[in-house]
Image 1 (tube, one colour):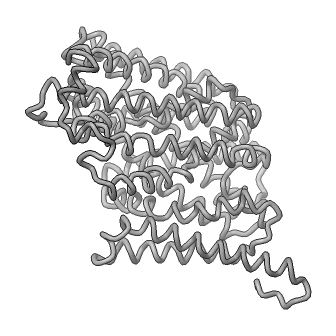
Image 2 (tube, rainbow, N blue to C red; image 1 turned 90 degrees about the vertical axis):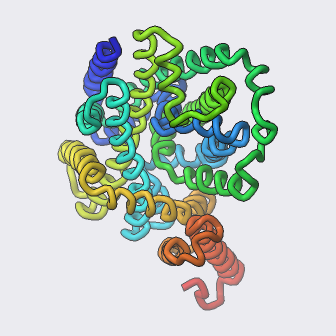
Image 3 (cartoon, rainbow, N blue to C red; image 1 turned 30 degrees about the horizontal axis):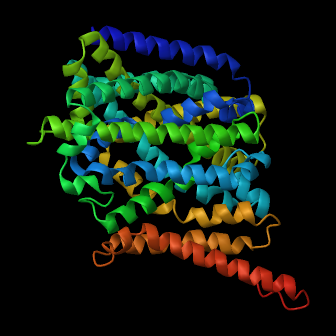
Length: 472
């Protein structure tokens, strides 16, 4: 029964993916969906991309182990993305750019370093998340059927790579809507069933240890600060949200879609944590694997066909995240590295569309092989993505707020290079890594200081136009 439901779900995704691919006529629709997406579509697409398999499995485990203090980890990213949409969303949309590097180069002038460095750094982090989804495919199918995890990896990869290659962002977003609805219903139903089985919300809360009832809890203040800086702040450069914003039919729709999508993400993330708290009430002695709470109670509390539907929600979480990361990586590398730098912008739209499809295929299959054959390289991707993206935040903010491009591009290049070196030093040195959560915070701070110095010097030059060009 479960296998039959999963097959139905796979066929439905393929049907939506390939049907929507008919709307992809040029490279802009492949990367930005022709900028026609409405609020409802963006809400579910944003939510589906944000809640991955790791979240569906991990958030209940956090609730089980940490109580209410787990909400810091769960809510950090939605809060930061909402702030991003409110503060810089309209400016980003009105510039009509394709990527973050486009934005920077539009303000400060075309420069291969300003174009390539941000795109490669952001892509490394996104490719690590993509590779993690392959492992989740294998584990999910193994959980459902007992099949070899490699089979699940191959089935999942063939599914989302196929419609992403053909349809680009249009297929990704419209399948995200299907998967987002599927996932939301599944999470809410399991939350209600587990909470009722535990005696209701009040009974669950009264059964929790005292340390679980505070927002500091067993986690501690320092760890919570790290949650907000790493889980939250580092998501500011997650290109999937910028791409969703740019795909809207207008700036107001994009901002509203992102905010509502993040609100849904936060609420359902809290529901997942509450599932874990209810599981603690039911089984306080300790579960063998808290990450299996969602799957275990889906099977034990519901008929098999309903359980198959809810476990299909787990599959939906993997598909939506994987397809989003794949298309966003293609947009960054295909547009900034291949089209703008290697081809120097000299490529017809038809040829570029073919190139983007081939790049999508290469990235999808290549990342699958890395996740399967060379997991150490995957570890390098994850490591690089953690400390290479925060230094880009000051550069991105400068490009948005420095509307006349007064800060020299040399300061931006220096901030990315020097802060990257600082991040590596803190990450590699055993005596420094425990400080400030490794290289993330030092790298971000270094980049911010260099950008601020550039802003001060540029302001000084503006007020003293007859002086020697101190900036240079």
